[in-house]
Length: 510
Image (cartoon, rainbow, N blue to C red; front, side):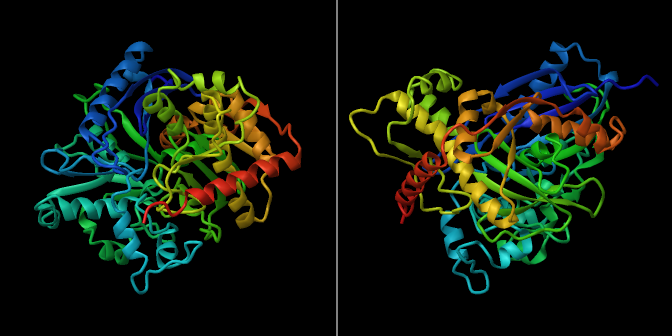
């Protein structure tokens, strides 16, 4: 049998779906990408059409293979990476979702979470310590899948009864795609991996199994949950009449941020990366023991290469970063395209004394304040659109510093170097601002789409395309390095203003 040439990654994100094909040296050969609709039924509510997402995935798979003239005979395996926490419940017999996918950004379960925090035995302190963190590594928040599952089962007529009868299945987007790729209603495999399961509020962070106490409290039947598998394993094969047109192993599954950690070759304890996408997500490898954060961070499953084993990570999740630039483009219409933000922000030396706190979905790490909302402060007649655009880029960097401050306290080791990835890292001004605001080195890899690469790595390892993680380490290469260029006094003055602005944003919603 001829040696396989490629591994395929399906990267299903918050705003688009992409298929990328990688060679053994970790470089991309070809990709295809398509956006899908964002649905906002009410303020703070965010939904997607799960069937539209599946159809866009079919389209980009076919598109990438056609554009690259890729033969399925040359594909070793397929990896999946996905927007995490986004929740789909569908009919086992038909594959039809019973409700739109509820997106990770959605705040509809905010009131339930507020009541949950008051429930005897479930209270958590300001740092999030309590039973929920002890069981799951997470916090009580609308962010995670568990409360979204509960909302669907509580609000779609007859769904609880159907779930009890075994007629319904739950999955985050990874599970939804693998089920459809491997046959759907005709025998599709119902699985997830530890990284995605750890974002549901339903997986025990120590045992790596579904937690019966959490499921009972949220009234989620264990029967609708997928099997939890390692991140690198053969789950099943694609069906010949699917988008690939052949039987190929689906062998990698990682939530998008854990995939980026894996793609950045952060295999050593202390290795840290930040992904700049719709939101920003910083993860630090903390080894094989789940350490609980005392400073507002999450403990999450990083990746698993063997059944029952896991490498863990501390995570700082920021809800709105790249999507704030999209807001400038789509709502305010002060840029035509997102990359234009760099051009306009470079026209001014600073933000003119303003700060933009884009708390559109509340504040995530390290504040976890569901009552916060977005504000721009410090406005004067001097301010032009260029200042607002620059303040938007600075908000990304300041929010990242908030997470770094918490990570430094938890780890006891000041961050010296941050590996960065995601679409926004092509913005050189953003990267320079990040180095200045952190006072640390920022390193951009040659392949900055490391989310897709991480999924490809997991899938390739499972079938022997790559022998071990040393092969993956050898593929990593630096593209650019950004270092601090401002004084400590100026950096601290700017950060002091940011913290003051954050305080003003909090407590807006009663």
